[in-house]
Length: 355
Image: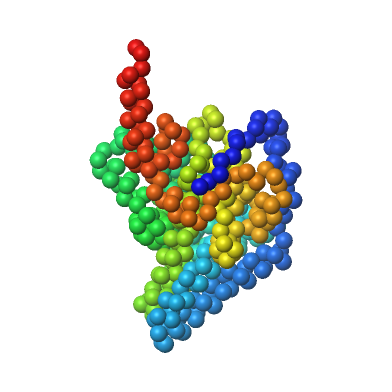
């Protein structure tokens, strides 16, 4: 069960030029090159090594390859966190260095740097705002929006939110298909980012297929992509859609409230915290995306502002998958039956109210 925190007080807006939390967080925003190199040495290097080992083991036993997949996927997920930090300019002191490292890591994780950087920045700027949902979010409807849809629309939403679809088919859609698509309304630089990554992937993947064979490529890469992608979608989902989270209408929304009440502290076992690059400390990350992943825990531990944020366990996160819509009446994320009961209660109360 998530622990509830009181709303951030008026001091959030009392100094519009300098938010109250800025000075406290600033010391943690400084990346250290040596520490970043350790991050890369414990993410992309073992991922590449395990992938190569997987190809070698194909000639021995595919069961051995499958035994390696969870570890390979774990390092792929950790590499994605390094990519993610680059999109925020948080992994290296130089902006240009972050961009070029991010582009390279983007090819490794099948994701165009510029495109994802843009959509993820939109997510940070609108997270927790009911009127600005949709940019970089896992889609969520209010109960009213859901019931206003056609039968086909409701079925499509139910299917999308079904864990088998979201965590089963979702990884291939989110990592393999969607990032390849260039759409007409996109800005030119976003289109260039996608095209650059697609061309680079044709070269890299095509070269690997020529070297080891396309069947062998899929036997090693596909399970790792699926498992890492599924874990990534789960993390992204539970960090903003969990029991006791707060979503607000536009006029009530504040950046600090969205970070401290609308982002979870997903408390994970240390080994999972390592493979997820501390991203479970999502409340710190959303308050300041410039904090490198290796400083998130220290920032949380040393600042009392973070000690009463919503905290959930891995089991809480798994249970959160049953929550489907935002219940406007109860102001909470709810299951479909809970939302129906809430709407029926509200309708009955209106019907019996004195005219």
